[in-house]
Length: 506
Image 1 (cartoon, rainbow, N blue to C red):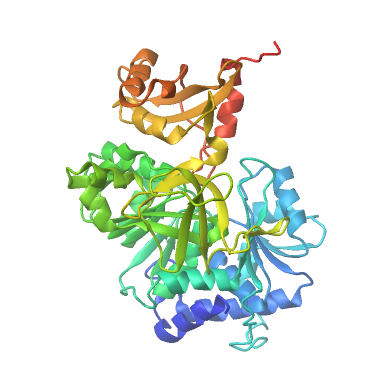
Image 2 (cartoon, one colour):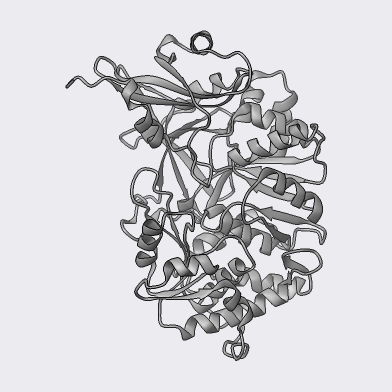
């Protein structure tokens, strides 16, 4: 197995169809294949072991991804939004190899020992003498070779290097994407950054399906809408914070439905119910998919499909309506098990740690090795449960659980209630130290214009949930801290609001 197989098949079957870029000037599948080969020749000629990318979305991304696979070198996209010291630290961990980026990105990496920095423009345009240096099919077919190294976001510590081998990525694509299943007029917009697992999977799945890729380097809701309309985009993937901004932008434009998008998937974080409910109205003929997955699982492991979304939108059955807050059912070839703290499987409806098993599941880091158990299960550190119909509900990271009086409280259930208030735009629940109860609940709220006070929100939670879930404090802020892939930075919130707790040593 090698991810180059996916591009080779697409180039053979769809050679002159546009693969990446605009309808009139984009790269065809054959051109992308040829450029990947030329890139592979360059990579093999440079001393080093890895292909490092320090760049936003551009045609250089798929060329580097597939060229690295052809050359037999791991592809390592870096978070170019990091401060210089953090970026260089990751670059040093990624050396030796060749680094590709824009002018600013390569300038930031110059001087890193073992890295040869090449600008994006030079990488794309200067290919003289490389065309005949490789032969189609001369890539390794060892499924255990590393295809991609992705650094985790580091929200709870130093970033780890998640290992995705060729067999993991190819298994994911073959199990979830129909080869050449896209019509010639279909296009997908990629607005997640290249260093996110969704950015990698979007490239691989779109190429294998034969769907043109339109790239938006810097996300802005209005730019996203304009590009969708201008390029005839039919498919999209966004994180929840992106969809919330798109909904707001469409409402600001008069609330006219966006009819051209046939399918829209979202994932990467918790989706507030009011946002998806409004999105279903603004995209009335769009097939919505909620995709849940992790870097360590090669992207998606479960889906809430289009029918489930529309049934939940119109159903009066409370069980069907609440499934809009689920991540659906697992993909074929993937198993999910809910376990307690001792690793024992829990019954239907019981909350525990989500564990997953399947061919696409890596669960491996360069620093720690494989974290799969003897039976192949990977503990995700996400909490959740499965209902009687097999729908998976994710309640957030286990590290984020609030422990009050010995009781484990899910921040998600408190946040869901707060978000039902019409004046609440965004909300997060965190735990801060409490000498009597262990932790006390703090709700951090972003309010819309309108009446919304602490007592009102506390009463709302009290009426919907047990008294133990009522926040001790409600703090109003202008915005919540998210990283650039849409993950809420609860660690930052806990640090910012630790003064609301008490310290028994004081």
